[in-house]
Image 1 (tube, rainbow, N blue to C red):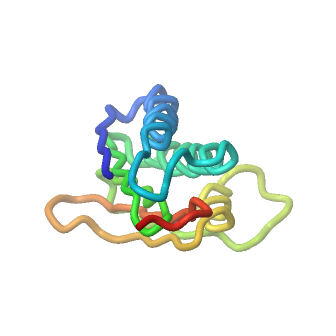
Image 2 (cartoon, helix red, strand yellow; image 1 turned 30 degrees about the vertical axis):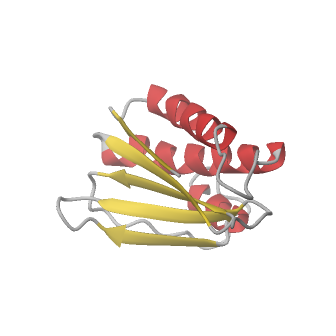
Length: 135
C-alpha cells in the first residue's frame, strides 16, 4: 500500500501532511496489518511534522511525502528541493529548536538522507514499526 502527496511548501503543508499520514494508516487494510494502534499513528504524525517542518522552513519550495507499508513498517519519505545537507546536531540540552532530526531518529527504526537523482534536492526516509508483521 502506497500514498504520495506534493505540497506547496507553505506552513499549511505541515498539517496537510499529518492528515495524509492519519488517513493512510486509517485506510491500511493490507493482510495482517489491520488498523495501526493510535500511538503509532501519533508517532508517524510527529515524524511527518518534523520532516515536513524542516522542508518548509529550510528548503523554501515545494516538498513531497511518500508513504508505504511493508513488512509491518511504515516508510515515511519526505523530499524537498534544497540540496543543503541535513544532519542531526550534537546533543545540547540548552539548545532551543533544531531538534527535529534527533526526534525522528529517536522514534524510528532507521533514518537516511539521500540526494535526489533527477533534480536538485534531497529525500529523508524514516522507517517506523507498526508492531505487527504482514503476510
